[in-house]
Length: 156
Image (cartoon, rainbow, N blue to C red; front, side):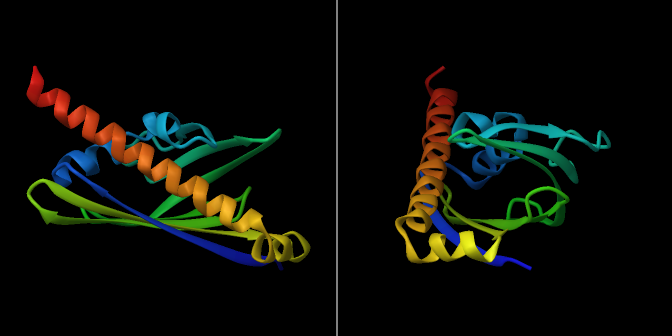
């Protein structure tokens, strides 16, 4: 048994909830804004929108991990929860909240299990903050992508 570590990040997107949800739902484009994610592939071809089972490849600093993730809860345009199946033990959630017609908050929580010796360094060291900072940078890139695509929609 390892130690579970959790990171929470939030961003405010200047776009309607529907646009934010649609961009997040495009799993193939996650590698555009998630720097450590090399690819996301649909395993379950039952649906093209938010499939229940996906295969993730993380590549960072010479390390590569693969795992499958299962969506465990889906509330349309509101919340997604998932957990890994085999591979890297991880689970998480993303919550979308419409503040106004044009402003949406996105709250991402990611939890993962590491061996106790490694987890100790993550908790006590800069490494834990580095992961949180990287997740924040990722969600901010997501915000930029949504806002750019949303503004393009109206400039055409």
